[in-house]
Image (cartoon, rainbow, N blue to C red; front, side, top):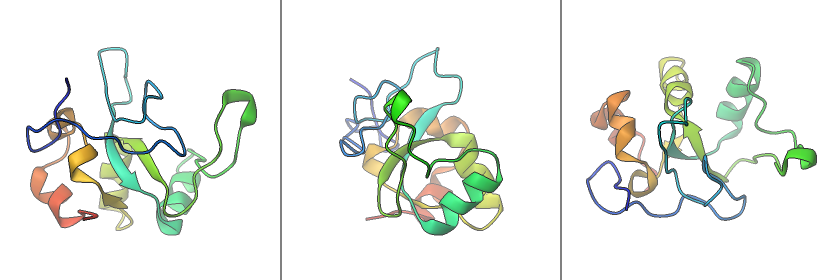
Length: 119
């Protein structure tokens, strides 16, 4: 069982849209997840625009890949480095800490995550 940033059992990030590296709704990871999709965000318009401009269009549906497109308010397991980049550009989305994998702490400080806590 995976743990969150508090060392407690990881909870689901989103079932609709279905998220996660393994598309299991959780921000689980393993050694094959080179992007470290471990941080559970609540998407905002500002962040989605930032991500699009950075070359990662999360808004446009791609049904051929089973990707519905992300809308503001959706939960999504994001790459830790993308969130850190958004943080440095003042548009980091809120984070669901209980659904953010503890592996995130290898890249992002807990205090920064807590400042952006969703709940």
